[in-house]
Length: 162
Image (cartoon, rainbow, N blue to C red; front, top):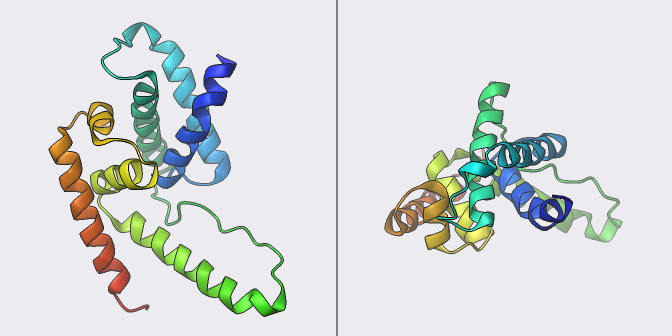
């Protein structure tokens, strides 16, 4: 099981973080819960999707459960680490960190199904067919969600800063 964890945990952690699982420790908790649920439900794995796809589907469900149980949605996907930046690079660093926070906030504003499709396809690079199996929607629906997410994200990013 440790080899399975090592090979799949990084992907699951990225997906859980981008789907708003919360802080790095919350993400780790969700990933660990994902593997516990996979072990508990191993007899239900029918091989209709890849093992990776099955684990991602469990992780998506665990992320949703985690957010509901916390009673809140996180506004950030990740914390921007505070690092020592040379004085000459501080303005550029500040602008980039603001852009990242704005993008993360906009991503959180997307409807869940759109964000899910965008994260899995555009950020994680998973094929639509595999995503389709993970979330139980036809590939055409996945592509429509990605299209709608891009459109919404573009609109959100074009809005003036408050």
